[in-house]
Length: 226
Image (cartoon, rainbow, N blue to C red):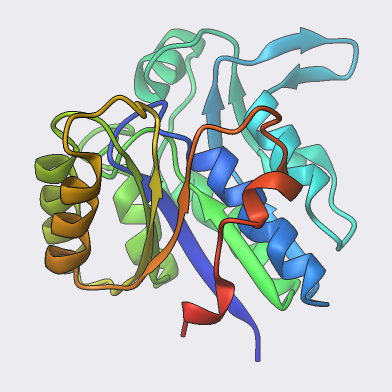
């Protein structure tokens, strides 16, 4: 039975892609076929093959099903700014409808394990009144939340979980990505998150010397996902 999830974070730069690549690698190690999508990415490098985003490339590297870069990341912008602002500057209409088709194509590949990764946090603006969270709703995917563990993360995590529930999507699991290992009362903070988030903790990713998908996968438990 195939599994597909939308992966989001409590904020920008909390390690969504690090965790997503680790989850995909763990799935591959378990003998599952994998696919991934990153519908929109800003902060892309100009290459002879076109704009390329490091996060999208990391996801592509963990896809066992052959995918082109454009299939994984159909909308790419060079400036490292909010996607809706980058789209506006580029004269692109960035709507849920424009992203829905390409991501449905990725899901239609019917990999055993598929991840669609958002940009930034849950409520990222697109064109007009559209938000990237509306894409997750349109796809009907359960959500995996990456919590960037640092001071203030509990409120961010709980508010995000509340928004996901209010949008009618199940929270399938969450991952503690410890981006500030010097966080005061770290264990107590993690315990509070575990008590209050209505989903299992899929793992705790500490600071590791070599941040590879393989290394991150060792800290994750796929079997806790429904």
